[in-house]
Length: 250
Image 1: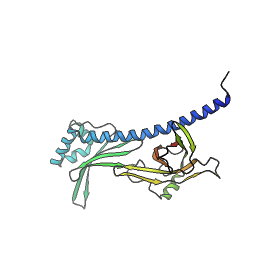
Image 2: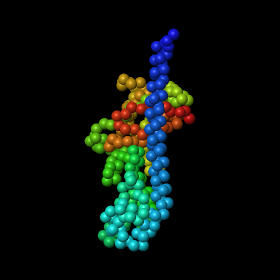
Image 3: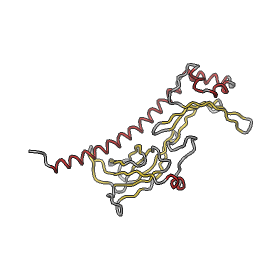
Image 4: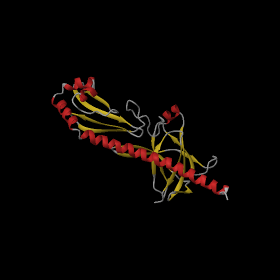
């Protein structure tokens, strides 16, 4: 006797829910993996004795900064320092108050979730560079809360999110009181900026399906979903995507 159509339909609905949640889980893991790799890179560079030796030479002989600034990568490679292929290396001299010169060496990295780097200067010592993925190529902040003019210039950017309660390994009841945030992460901590979301009537989707407005410039964001009485959930999103989130009860 074949399996009933009703059973097969319910099976397909359950499997579809599992696939949607699996996609969200993978995005969450991808964000964590980017952060793990960033910490590993920072630790590796900070403990590279060859690199520390070259920086010591720059400290003792400031005139080398000019030579290093011409071809930074070659300067370090010639001195047996292994520079990661994806590192953007700069050696720069900045004049402050007309006379005072401040020199710095920096290596910057860009991943799907993070823009970060490490630097050193004879004046300030070692430091970590941490930026939001929503900054532009020059490092200027491309979005901040309330940037309505920028939003209008880029156009409306949205993501659609269905929110449910997590019931073990299954989808539970719908959640109709979710809130959404963009996370800006750095070594100073995490800042959450609230987003505008619409759901339910008079729109056609159910009350637990939200259309969430994203800020420009329309790149990958750390996205946070919360609801009273539930643990929050964060993952990576891009504009135009559709996701499903299961929130576990506290």
